[in-house]
Image (tube, rainbow, N blue to C red; front, side):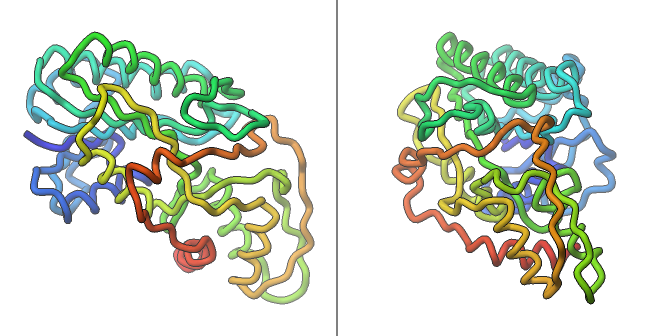
Length: 305
């Protein structure tokens, strides 16, 4: 038996692999499309193509997981990734994994890293029972994966499904293409003197950024719980709501720089203005979860630029 992590070489995956290898008694199998020989640490790294059904079936047969953290997929919300690629990476990989797990006929707990993007631009506080209305391809393909898992959990008592609808994760080492990481790099590149122009996207949108180092213990605690039901959805977010303009101000203060902000209010690529989510279920299941101040995370991110 083992713990299997897909997308293990990604941002969230790397932190989760490190956390579980330090805290779990079960062997951790880290799955990546990249050359497994390049990865180090206590986990066993396996190279596998989740776009290939035979590769996925061989992976499940070899590793015999009791837990699966499915983190692989496209997580950037951008107009440069079309629906076919989002569907292949976020939906079809989920289909193949669960199909292979069902053929193995062993009890398994399956975590899907989903997103609050499934809610769309709802005007109301979004709980797990709020009707979904995704406004971008990323959110829609995650919703399709969720619904497929719901159906399979109803059909197969061996499957325990946990859907984590994550708000924006951020932290040291995040790649380009995500708002907080991009802002860190832009501000780091500003000259130390004067008031240069800082070109940014919409500043009135808001997020509840979740430090990746706070996220991974929460995921592990959720997966360690005895599941009261075969299928469950949980909103996962920090309590700290911040507008992008506040994020910029905090980063400029950390960098001790000044800038003239030139904002474009074009939000066509993301189309998400901000969602207020209810996390009462998370609080009940994972009491006393730790959420570090956003300034601390930004300071660590800026230092690692």
